[in-house]
Length: 81
Image (tube, rainbow, N blue to C red; front, top):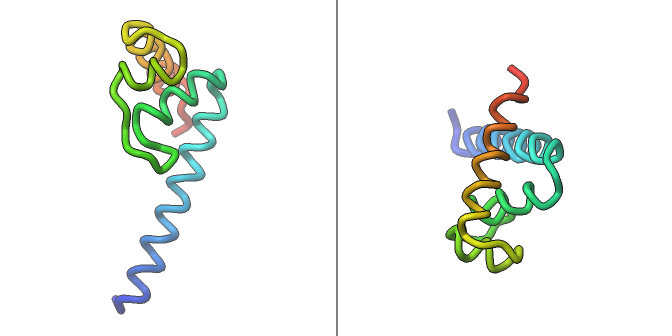
């Protein structure tokens, strides 16, 4: 494929992936969605450690670990095909 065509495909795939991530996160509690966004850098920032995300959200690192695990489990259980 031509470079412009390849870029268009990549842009479309990226857009679709971002839409799917937003859709999945919208099914979570707002705080848990924010936690995952911070932990994995989904808002365009660098991924944060458990301690950094906890500090931002007023949680201990242990609470972040527990909430993250529960949120990811919920996403796994509720995902659509």
